[in-house]
Image (tube, rainbow, N blue to C red; front, side):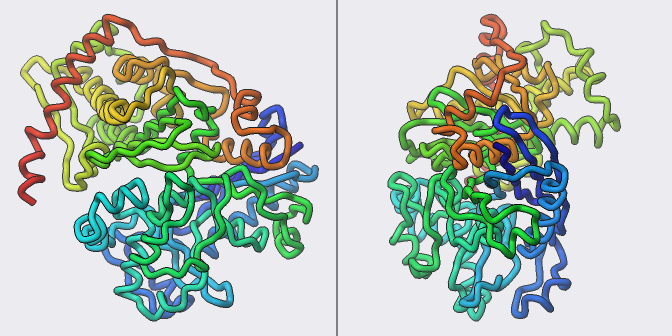
Amino acid sequence: MITIGIDLGTTAVKMLAMDETGRVLHIASRDYPLYIENNEALMGRYPGITPLEAGWTEQDPQDWWEQTADGLRELTAAVKEPIAAVSFSGQMHGLVALDGDNRVIRPAILWNDQRTQRQCDYLNNDIGRDKMLEHTANIALTGFTAPKFLWLKENEPELFARIKKVMLPKDYIAYRLSGVFATDFSDAAGTLLLDVENKRWSDFMMGVVGLPPESLPRLYPSYAPVGAVTEAAALLTGLCVKTKVVIGGGDQAVGAVGTGTVKSGMCSVSLGTSGVVFFAGDNFAVDRGRSAVHSFCHANGRYHLMGVTLTAAASNKWWSEEVLHTGDYDAEQRVIASDRLGRNPVFFLPYLNGERTPHNDPNARGAFVGLSLTTTRADMTLAVLEGVAFSLRDIKEIVGRLGVAAKTARIIGGGARSPLWCRIIANVLQLRVEKINSEEGPAFGAAILAMTGGGAFNTVEEACESLIEVTEAFEPDADTVAAYTRQYGIFAGLYGALWGRRKDER
C-alpha cells in the first residue's frame, strides 16, 4: 500500500509518498504567498476585504489548492503506482469561509494573525475565562478561530452574512479533493468552538459567535476516511477516483503521530522556530487555574496537552547569526565543557517575541541575567540553550500539576540536530530524550494516518509501533539533573522580577 501525507504549512505545502514499511518514496514541496502588510493583490478577487495592518496575516485558499494539486502531480508521476489514501496535517486556527455556492468569501485569516486582541478580551473577560474553560477547555488567544469570526462580524458584516460553510485550512484541501464537508477533532479543538471533553460542537460558543450549526463541518477522528477523490480532482492531481481521503488533523497532533507520541506517558518536544512540548494522554485534562496550556483532542482519538514557547531554535539563530555573526552552530557549542552543564552563572530568558506558556505575555522580552567581567562567549551560548530548555520545563511543570506525566520525550526540529542541546533538555526535563528514524514530522504523521484509514493498520498506535524506530537516546544524569533543578528554581523567578510587575500594571 502507498499513501500520501500532505502537510499544509504557513509558507509551503510539503507532501510525501510512503509505502507500508515506512519508506519514503518521494517528497514534493510547493511555496505560496503569505500576505503580511499588503493584500491589494487579493482585493479584486475578494471585494469588501479590509486592507492589512501591522500584525495581520492572510493567505488565499486558492493558492493552497493550486500548489497542492501541482505537488500531487509530481508525486503521482514519480511513484507510478496507485495511491491507496491521502491524509493531511494542517496549520491550525485559520478561518476559511465559503458562501452558498461553495466559493471562498475572503482570504483566510491565519493562526499568527494578531488583529483579534479586543475580541479575545471580550471572550476572556466579558464571557469569562471560566465559561471559556467550561465550554471549550481553553481560553481565547489571538490565533484561535472563534475571535476571528467576531472580528469579521464587527468589521466585515456583509461578508459575515454570506457565510454558509466554515472550514479550517487542511479541510479546504480535503473538500477540494473529495467534495466532502468535514473536519477532525484535533483541528476543531483549536477553533474555540468545540466542546473538547465531549468531542462535539459547542452550542454555547456557536451562540456567542453567531454561527448556525449547519455552517460547521461534520466531525471525525483524524484517521477516518471521509470520502474518495472526485473525478475532477483526479484529473488535476494524478490520483485515482478510488483513492481514499482521510481527514487528518492539526499540525501539532499529526506531527506527534509522526514521532510516535501516541501513548499515555509519552511526550514530544518540537525544537523548531518555536518550541512545543506535547503530552499524549488517554483522559481529558484541563488547566483550570492559570489556563496556560492548551487542552486539545489528539489525532489518535484521545487527548493531549500542549504548551508553547515562542522562540526556541529562533533564540539560538538570533544569538548565533545576528549577534555572533556566524552560522557555524557546531563550532560555538564544541567549546562548551560538559562540566559546565547545570553550573552556568548566566541565565537567558528566551522571550524575544513575547511568550505563550506559561506567561501569555506578548510584550515580554528576552534578557541575559548574571553577566560579569568573567563571562565568556561560551557561557552566553550555553545560557541560550539552557534558557530554552528551562522554558520547556515551565510547560512540563504545569502539565505535571494536572496529573499528566511522561517518562520519554521524542525530539524533532532543527534544534534536535544538536547533541548538546538534546543532553541539556534530557537533564532539565528529567526525561529520556529519543531521536527517531524520520525527520519529516507532520507529513510523515499524515501518511501514517492515511495508512490507518486505508486499512493497512488497525490503529494509529499499531501503525506507529510498526513504522517508527528510535535511533539515538539521551539519558538524564543524576548529578546534572540535581544541578539543573537548582538552576531552574532561579530561572522560574526571573520573569516575575523583570516583567511581572510591568504586566500587572498594563
